[in-house]
Amino acid sequence: MNQGRHHQPEKFVMDLNLHEQTEDQLIERGLGGDARALDVLFSRNTRTLYQTALRVLGNPEDAEEALQEGLLSAYRNLPRFERRSQFSTWLTRIVINAALMRRRSKRSRPAVSLDDFASEGELPLAERFADESPNPEQIYAGTELGDRVKKKLAEISPLLRTAFWLREIEGLSAEEAAHVLGV
Image 1 (cartoon, rainbow, N blue to C red):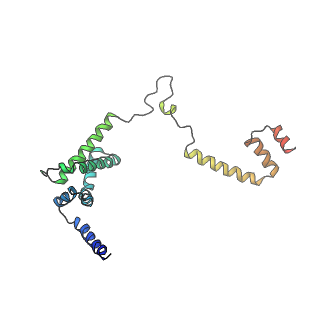
Image 2 (tube, one colour):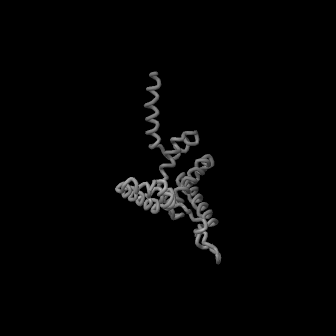
């Protein structure tokens, strides 16, 4: 039990030391399977890599995706890093390649407006595939109207309220509603 307490401070000191280690030391530890060393190594470069991907792609979401793809590729290919250049240079090249691949992929599948392909006599695609359900504004208006109707119904007599319910909600004719009410 005493051994476990002694081991914890060592781990803490090792974690603190990770941030003080050189790129080469972190690479060696990462190659040896130390995930924390790789995390430190990659986090040192993340901001710069993101900015680079953003400059290539011009879109924050795409830049984030390219960064993640690049870091994953670097992780998988770390044993191939030959140290002929700095690690940050190698990592930057991988992220740039990921960003360029993403840009090429987007170009080969460009965004298309649903309004562009309406043939003569046809409804535009946007209208053919339009969602028929109410939009948030319509839902709010319906809710607001429903609240007003409930408030007004509460102000009238129970007989009139029931007559309204039978006609407007249940869809009965005036004659059928009168019969149900015994009027």
